Length: 252
Image (cartoon, rainbow, N blue to C red):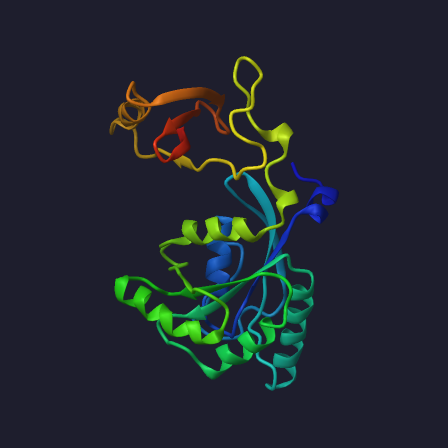
């Protein structure tokens, strides 16, 4: 259980963008549950929402914000001030745009503000539900914030790739602590504590469809099984396996 003091030390990742681009949907996708209210109309999210999230064993504080829209009515201005206050505390920013709509003047206004930040900004082209929409992301290069990362927050498409990139820009001191790295029977760490923890692949499905058979095949003699670790849920078996592409933790 993370204490309030632990939470205060977590890196802060803030989700921003103009209204109705899917910020709260992306927030829920990363957190892994329906925390933020999602509706297909602007203005649903007004206050900041902060929830602890994690990816590959590295925790961070994820902050959902309302749409940044200065120059609107009094309520829009208040919401925009809330967004700006959140970003001042950010270690990284996820700037969400809508790949199904394309580049807008409001996106350009947000980008102009974000380019002045010292915190790293990842440009997220959301609603890229298919290959064509993924290709549409390149017009967002005009925002001057680097390569757009195409995702579909609703369907989870390429969300993991985005989180991999997010971990790369978080401060080094937030990598997995040495004490949290599993050890083998000789007490040796199973991976370098300064590295990002290996990806975890869970095998799920209804009973009697061959999950354990698939698990055994994946960790069979053609792979080097490094260690079996205690699972995080009852009867789960975590097995660290060396592969040509690096270590992977399989969870049966």
